[in-house]
Length: 308
Image 1 (tube, rainbow, N blue to C red):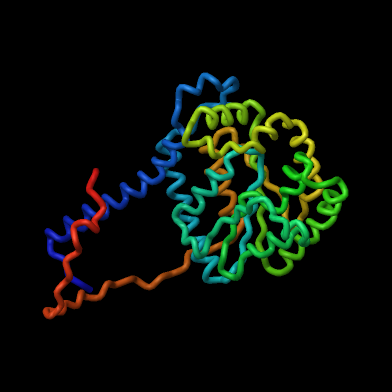
Image 2 (image 1 turned 90 degrees about the horizontal axis):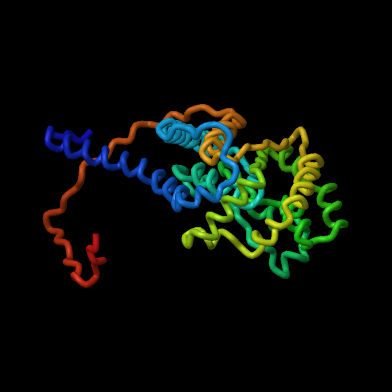
């Protein structure tokens, strides 16, 4: 192993400290994005039940859970497991936030997100589950569905993009489809993120008044807002008819975003038994120097300007 003198050790420690700080800053940047426009707090008519979670506890637990997710990732990859996690819920319920925290420290070649757009003309003529099936994992992969085949029981049904006969066929087919996945060795976990009417109203107002978040609020979201009760009835029937032993639904109380993230990640970790995978220690080889090699000078105009 390469020896490092005292001065090099100090420099190395400084680099390590800076990297650790950058890791924390990455999460802080995401939190700042969540908390901008604090003046809009006055628009919130109903406050979350209970006091807000302590920030230091939140960050400590989040980083600890993300460390466990890395261990889970190693286990999934080593054991060639196939994992599907479905995230459903109303618009602005916080699905994207928890997905970001799950994938933040993971290898995108192992854990990927499937967020499908509206079907095109060709896909509309296919078997309904066909376009989702192409995104299912192979051995050693985790796929997080940011909305899923349950679109048919929710947005498609409420907004009139399918008829009741198609909805009924979906309810007949989806339990068998999911049982087939489980029998094939796929671990299937389904989450519904639950928020109140008042909380969604507040989050929509945040998006309307925040130019960096307006892209999240589509015309479809605005129309869906007026159909809250239609969505509630559709959700209740969906949960009732697709809550099966092989793939049950789990409801995440999501009015408090931070608690929802921690609770969901902790629960996800509890659903897949895993062990830490031992890794051989990595030893960097000595750097080989070629005295005959001379680096070419890169022209100054090729460098990005140092504005900061």
